[in-house]
Amino acid sequence: MIITKDDICINILFFISSIGFALSLVLIKYLTHIYFVSPYLCLLFIGSISTLLTFIFFSICSLTTYKDLSFIKNTFDFSNLDIGKWIYIYIVIIFISGAFLQTFSFLVIYYFSPTLFMVTDIMTPFLLWIIKIDEEEILSNKIFNGLGYFIVLIASLLYNEIIICNFCSLNKYTKKYLDKRQKEELVLMKRTESENSQYSDIDENNNNENDISYNSENDQEID
Image (cartoon, rainbow, N blue to C red; front, side, top):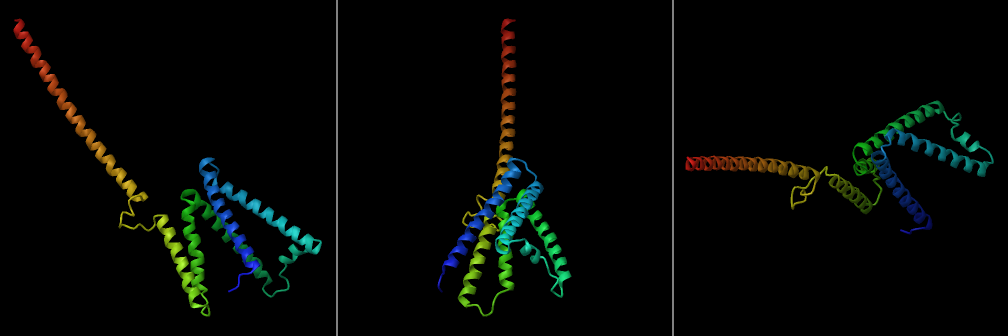
């Protein structure tokens, strides 16, 4: 297999876009929890900026290539197709489903964590790979692709503590068992405090009895 210059450029662009996407998820969590910005406001802001930048990009491409905006116009012209009207309905459905997807993604980040979002983000290409697996694909590629997806999926489930390994003390510092130990320590502290308070009450009663007996003896000696 020969790696060309185009392959290197595409992989570099994928790498940069992946870092940018991960950074955007972290920034959403930061804005919503540190600056108390509503996730819906973040969604509106990102959607507006993305739409504006996309329109500017396609306008520049159209002006530089066709000297007008005919490229954008022709992109949404399906009159020459037999199912032209249905394509507009399909675009509307994609737009609505995409809006729901982004809204739910932002809510997952807001209420949980960006790391939990990566579980579903990994499952999607994994399931698509299983559905669209090519029978003519080389066996070694199938094995490596399946193994890679499996390792990443299991690692994300372990990291998010959806799967907890209860052996070799691997569960010792998980959130579930940290909370469990915290509750046990609180119960032990309350029990210790109650026992100490009982002992202090007994000591105080003993001291009071000794004081009373001492005072009574002194009174008798005076008489």
